[in-house]
Image (cartoon, rainbow, N blue to C red; front, side, top):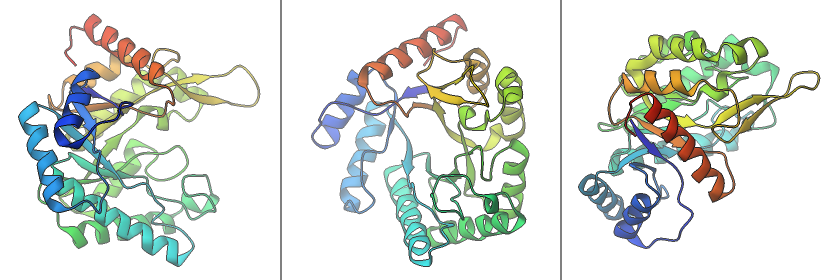
Length: 277
């Protein structure tokens, strides 16, 4: 597996970007390019990444392809298609988005998001995105969320079967599926379930941590790796069973020092397990 994260230092061009990735101690990286970048530029980054031994983990296409607003929905689908095309050109392992919401907030909870109708819309949208691009090098993936599909390993399996496209795969973030005290205290078993059921499809993973607060009713907060209760021993052992180039990407922290702390914690856990990052 390969640890990666965002860069906090300015860089210039593909060579400068690669130097920044190496300086951070990473062997995987987020795609640093916008979807409208010239094809030649994307291919240059692909070339440099391969030469320097850097895996481009993912292109983010964060948007709401299920929006109740037709204009926003159409624009989101087009953004996902452009992101998937960029991922294919630059050699990223996947293009990733969440499924989207039928509610007011693109990544927020809404009662209509966990319904058969929403599931059917997700299937149609994912097929449209993949069929519109027809990638040959990368995959379109959905990051699981606590309040929209896919929210469990089984719902992701159902989506894979329903979408029925070779280039639809899995993005995994265990923190996003720890949505109750029961899952929190048994998150190691939850992680193993996801890998047992979906490991063959996983293309990229996120790294953060989760902490259950001791105030009513239930408060689960994202925190820096090492400050919460995520079972990183199980997480890293399961990752190590998969593709040796599997990215584990730090995210959702604001300060560089937190990324440094989180990376150090994950490296220490990997060392304890006899694993290489």
